Image (cartoon, rainbow, N blue to C red):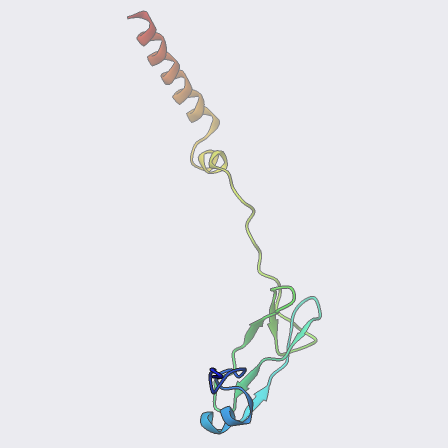
Length: 113
């Protein structure tokens, strides 16, 4: 007896039978976006969809605009700050010296006991 599955070797929605079930796709249009590196991205949008001002470049990640001659500038990223850098923003060197002196005095008092 030969056993098997009637839909063996096919995927759901594959081939011509899947298209008729899904219906026709909505009319689309392609919009070009250029990034600062000169890359062009052409995503497609539905005809009645709102077109965004900027689109991230799939190659380099920079923002792209619709004006090829004047693409948007790359966003300025702040460098990584260490915990010490944040402390130095909040306190001056004089404050740090005072805190250190206070901590050393407490340590000396604890050792004398």
